[in-house]
Length: 338
Image (cartoon, rainbow, N blue to C red; front, side):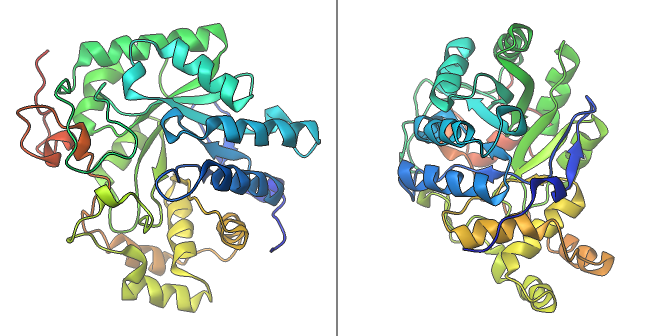
């Protein structure tokens, strides 16, 4: 195994609150490809490697295993709780019972409180774990400002209770953000969204930055190990592009590390996942050394292909045309009735 990285040399990103957090984290979504034991084992290794930010979610089905890892690392003196930045999310079937969901995550993760709590998807459209891409819930419905704000108000109460420190949004669009941000008492500090060289979401990225909301990019490598239900024939494999390979060759590294350098230098926080110790060690080290040149950053900026990999089709409601309806691509919220 490669040597770890001193957490003190990992660059920080500053939130609008003034707090500084790590510029890279580790994702924990591996439930379609890896067991909970494999994921939690990777988290254990990552803590010792120097990671301090971890992105969890109740629907990943592994928070209890990860919690045992967090507890063991703290009891062994490897890390203190206040040195960790733990993120998790309320799942779609708990939008009406956010405190209950949050308390369960805190108990499972054995972390006392959550640093950043996300609303995982902007509507309560549940789907069963591991379902196929053609699965649909007949009770699914389009986005509702009133319903979303009801869920968000519950998150605000959790901040006031001290159960969570900050609120985050996820899988949002510019029209949805414009509809709800003015209604919030406690502003969100971050938004998770799919970001990789072939899907840069520039308009949404710029809007988040304008609003002092930190973008956190999932699938930063183009996610070759994403669930099969999200794979389609037209998808592009970012890391196979000759331009990325050429830049990687110049830096004597894998194209994955170029994706992470680009993400960091662009201003988003990537949250890659790997169960392989050498890989996650390299991922962390990539943001501490050998930055990309302005010319290389410009080359990657030109790789935008509007290549969304997580379509979200399992969340479609009766009457919706296809997965494009989830993403408000024409600048209006599709199906909004309030």
